[in-house]
Length: 451
Ligand code: UDP
Image (cartoon, rainbow, N blue to C red):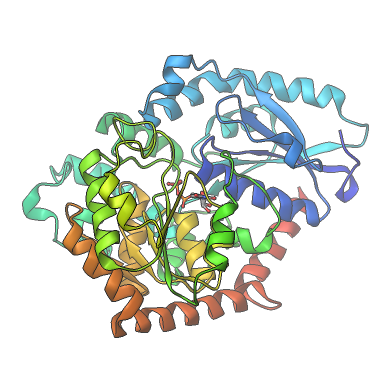
C-alpha cells in the first residue's frame, strides 16, 4: 500500500458501480487524498474503475457474484439489490485481507460508501469501523424519495394521468410527474431499495455532492431529518478537476471539431451513461436538430439505441443534411466540452453530475429527464433556478427544433444564459475561501481526523 497519509489515517471508499456514482466518489477520494489521508477504493467487479489512472490510491476488488446474464440485464435496481446481498461477506473478507497487508500504524479510520451500496455500512458496523454515507444525487431527491412509500400506500403511485401536473404537497416545485421513480424492474423492489438506501444505520454523517446556494431549503430539511452532520461539499468535480474517471473511452476529436465553431454556437446533446432511446425517439431528435439549423455535438453511446449497435439505423438523408454542421461521437470528454467557448447550450437528461457540470460552466440547458432523480433535477433547473427549458411529453421533431432555437437564438435563452452565469459565480464563491462548500469540507476533514 502507498505511503502513510494523515498520521496513518486510511479511508476506505466504496463507490456505486455506475458512471454517475463512480465519478463523484473518485473525485471525493482525490479531494481527501489532497488533505493527507491514505485512500483505498473498494469496488465491485462489475464496472470496476481503471486503477492505473489512480496510482495514488490502493484498490480492493470485491467479488460480487453477478453472473454474465445479470450484468447484461437492464434491470439496474435488481443489480443493486443483488450486489448488496452478495457483497456483504466478500467485502468483510476483502477488508480483513487488505488489513493484513497494511503497514503498521496504518489504520482504517472510516468507510465512506455510496448510499446505494449500503452493504458497506453493515460491514463497517460489524467491524466497529466508523462510516459515512455519500449521496450522489441532490438534497431535494433525498428529501422526497422516502415519501414515495407513503404515496404508494395512499394509492398515488403509480401516478395516474389525472395527477401528473398536480403539485406534491409540501414539496414545491415538484409535481407528481417529477417524482423520482425508476423505470427499471418492479416498483416494489425499487421501494424496498429506497428504504435500505436511506437508512444510514450507524453512519456518523452524510456527504452530499451539492451546494448550499442551489439547495438551501432541502438542505435545511435534511439537517432536521437526520441526527448526524450533513456535509454539502460540492461540486466535487471542481474540487478535484484532474480526476479521470470515465468507464468509456473519450473521443477527444470532438474538441478539435469544437475549435472550428464560433462562440456559443453549438448545442451539446447527451443523455448520460444509462438512458436508452428507441428508434422513433432517435429519429425525432435527429430531425429536430437538423431542422433547427444549429451546429450540434451529439453523444450516442454504443448500445443506447434499442435495436441497433450504434447509429447504423440512422436515416442517410439526415446524415447528409447535417454533415457540415453536426458531430456525433460515442463518448465525449464532457467537462471539457461544456467548458469550451463554442458550446452555448446543453440538451441533457439532467443527471445530477451533468446538471452540476453545466451550471459550473454557465451553460443553459434543454431538459429531457428520463427517470429517477433526473426528473427532480429537471424541475429545479426549469422552475427554481430557471436556467433550463423543459422538453415535455413524447419527443417530437417540431418541439425539438423550437426548443433548440429558443435556447440558442432567442431572448428567453439569453436570459437563461445570464441566470446560469450568475449561478456559476455563486458556486465559485462557495468553493472559494470562506464559502459554504469550503467550510463544510473543512468540517468533514476535522471529523475524519477525529475518528
Ligand atoms: N459523461 C462523459 N461523457 C459523455 C457523457 C457523459 O464524460 O459523453 C459523464 C458526465 O460528465 C457525467 C457522467 O458521465 O459526469 C454522467 O453522470 P450523470 O449523473 O449526469 O448521469 P447518469 O449517467 O448517471 O445518468
